[in-house]
Picture 1 (cartoon, rainbow, N blue to C red):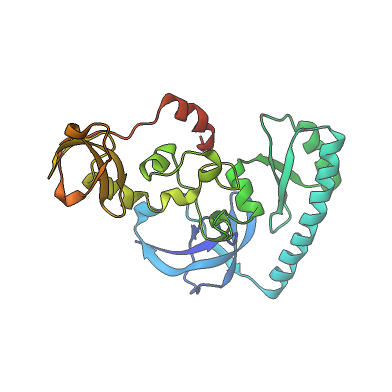
Picture 2: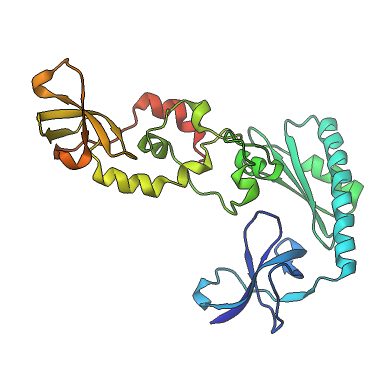
Length: 289
């Protein structure tokens, strides 16, 4: 077992483990630590605890010290510098005529590196831009191309539900979301209905997927052959949440559908939920590949 604390560097982001070196830290404390990016200031999210050594996936680095008042002042100064660096970078991008969109700028706590985050449709040759920025700031410069989901997480905004974006408020990591989830949940496959502000499938499709998978195991699919109290028929519509389904009876072809409760029918031959080639072609770009 190894003693660790969990530290986060952004309000919504991954939690990284560090060795507290015998010191006791509480949630909400701030510490100075060394990361792959350099020396950083972060908030303690997980207080002292022990975990299995196998759960440590990267080298466990020690906490340098507890953050002081001078550290907080320096951190605020870095925030002001980031705004200035953002404006300078925008100007340099225009000068170099680069087809890229600057999203955010971050100074490492010790000022040893400045990171510029941007989006672009394809690969960008930004070597000359890096040289120009290095000449201005006299420190290490790193440009990182990010995806549209990361852009939404950094910039923020409101979702179609009227609430702040999940990725901006509580989602530490993005989970895979697929068109198949929308299909299984019976949602309209209209891109404008199932895509978020970032233009990708809404993260909230993942939240209830486990429940829908459970219900799908109990409910026959559309086109399934079933035995009802009134005879055999084919399922034409289902409502997973109510447990009701509509059936076209074989002996009444062309007549109105009959509605039954799931417990009152027997499945003779189940069907599968499939995406057509047209649906896949139209919606594939919504998946975050």
